[in-house]
Length: 125
Image 1 (cartoon, rainbow, N blue to C red):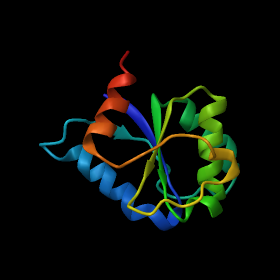
Image 2: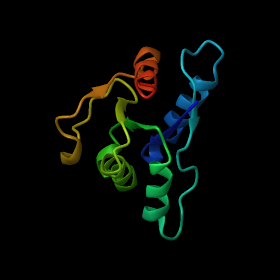
Image 3: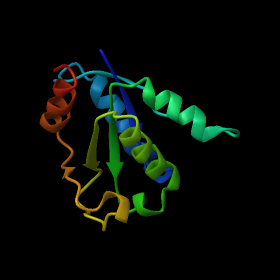
Image 4: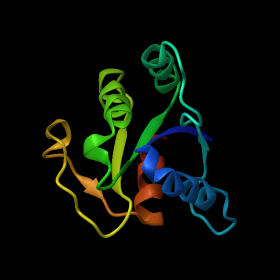
């Protein structure tokens, strides 16, 4: 089973919980181990976060109107790129917010079981 880090704005915690729940659904065409940060670290969080991301097979970054101001999430996405961890950006809903400069020009997927399954399957190749 693949280890997936889920990057999200704290205001989007419900969407992270929903994604994890979908992976546990018996009818879901995908499964993964959630490696996201459940509670914020108080000290040395950037180093701890980098270590955790390096141990993952991929990252799903949830994109919403909260993302541009979510400095922690943006750090996580940047770190995944630096560590060569594959990242799939995925909208949390029908809103299409303006992406922060660091993400401009990148593909953002629609949330669907097929898109998640395709991304996770790519991690096996």
